[in-house]
Image (cartoon, rainbow, N blue to C red):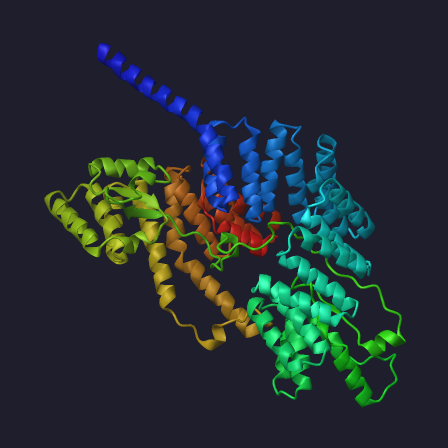
Length: 633
């Protein structure tokens, strides 16, 4: 009794100690999380803020800062959900309203953004940044005068707020107030003489005022300050082209395209310059420009209102092709030649507002900007994990079924359930073979112990001997048909074998479908045949997984794996059901969120897919932010 009391007291003291440590460390974790945001380590910040939220879920700050981190990762839906939670806990939180307004703006929910900004101003009427953001949203809603008033109010409250000057400059450009736009850029340069976007924007206004020398000088300075600014090279090329320096313009367009490969106007204008110089490859640039921006095709269409000779029409078309692009790669406006300007009253030009803040420059290394492959997270299987592994103390998921096997083995060898396929190559093959030899000896001694066959099957599978592995799992089932892990491991080996066989196949050309072209009836028929064959190949896998779930309906790894197989069989709605069921049982199953998110996107549920991917990113699958940026925003 005394011994039991001491053990209980010792456990209680450990619990109190850990609890006290948690109490003391939450401020530290919050501080580290905020610091990581400051230094641009947004995924690292989320890790620390998750800890604070788990320990003190009643605090609004960790939700707010986690929302900020997600915001920087361009996960606007996930950020909004965190801001919602922060405001639920603390309704009088002006910064949270402002940040949520920015998230709503990024999601093009402009009315909701306006409501958030107004609420932020009610709570803190002296915040110039809210007025600046309010101006950006009004501009997006095409209320240019309202935007200019909001920017002016922000500048009145904070005369050194560079972003408001720059955005007001862009708004004034839309209203053809180029002198006012230049004044705003001049004000920026007085505050920050080395701020490249100010020179870029002032160059555009000077170009529109036909101050070509001044525009050229500004673009030179912008490039000097920011040598990787593709828009500056593009705009400088336009000025050179206007001044008749086609060869110099081509060099600038080359640089612009190398920095921004999808910049349609650079291809278009380079084509014009090449055509003027008589270079043979000018048509390729026109084709690429039209491919990137089909509206450019209209430049080659005849104008029925003009009654001119063929030569005059050609000359007019050539002079009207030059494109000014001073905002984003997606924004361009056709400029007119001087003769056309004299003959016709100038039309009001439209441009997208530059939404620039003092921290708007792209940061190299942001995970959402990396070019990664978009594919499902892999199947879960049983893998060998030596005790000296750096991952030994960082096992992500617990499985009672695996624990039974490890207890039988006295944790040597130690097995874990994971979908890290690199474990296959991480350890020497000799380690696997050594363990196979050990279980060979045990089976020779006792042929009726199913655990030895199960262990040997797992290591046969790890050495890619799938047939031998399946035979071992079959033997387990013969000895005891209720062993869940035998069916699970056999399903995994069968799936791996099917995938391996498919990877070796080389399809004839008529089986290949170009997703960018209209598929012929024969191609569609061939595709259906391939899908049907793939469904048949996975039938035994599906049968085994169904048996696992019959024995234990809550075995999340079987639900997850079946979801993946259903995706391969193009049963996407069934896959979503399996992932959803797994998540009901394990709410922090990151891989299930990720795969369900991808599947929902495929089913055109962008909103649901984005929310799932946000949760996957929050739980540590950081490539989810790349998918959100590319497919959801």
